[in-house]
Image (cartoon, rainbow, N blue to C red; front, side, top):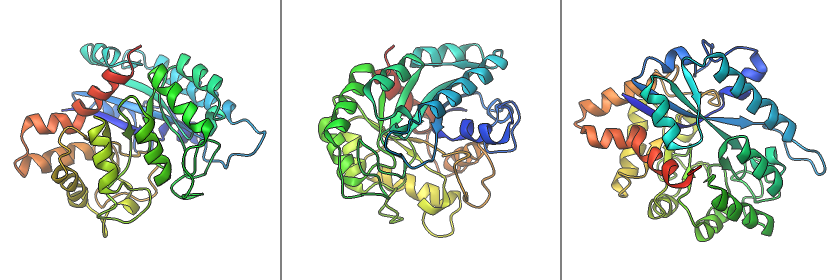
Length: 311
């Protein structure tokens, strides 16, 4: 089976642990990814620190960008750094894992247009406008949740559209989400978000938000963080989220965004990225056809990358 996963925090974890991608003790490792027919992954640069006026976090981004590229180079026979869907298919064609770079929280780019352009030059192809902290672009789901995009945030989204960088609305405030939805000229993604109708956490999407992403021809990645899933979750509850989105018409919208190595608690039985194979088997057992499974597991996200990330 082929997988295109929209979000993991593995690179920031490696900065802390000193491990390598080849064989980590976390959720994501190259040896686990290679058990699949093909794997593509957005690796997020992530800081997790509250933005401070006048204090740049760009060095954190640069350190993690460099670490990812060192790891790809060290495993050059098995991985390739990618910026387009064409790159991804070429990597898959020679049996390599496709590594994409994203940024979780635009404060890592100092919320600055020149830093955004520099990030694009270095290969960034998706940016979460906020993490959990508010920043100069917008409020977040947890801090200043009543605040939408600033003028600076609007300019940032316009420049992301121009460059061909995916606007990622996971973690964004609700007003910020709707500002993006009205402003964007390209499909948007929620790389790792579940359904608020099933779990009321503000990190999850309302049905109206999911529908807006669907109408923009974007994608929503299923998140495996237990706190965003109903009850004491198992993979059956992930399927509940999936089927809720499908009931909204999301066959061409739902994707994967496991939040690997950013999860504090996973559903019962989920230990690492091989859980996607377990989910695939469960869905097959419930009668999901191959065409739908391929859309969910890689084709939907690949389509959006192909449309937006053109060079």
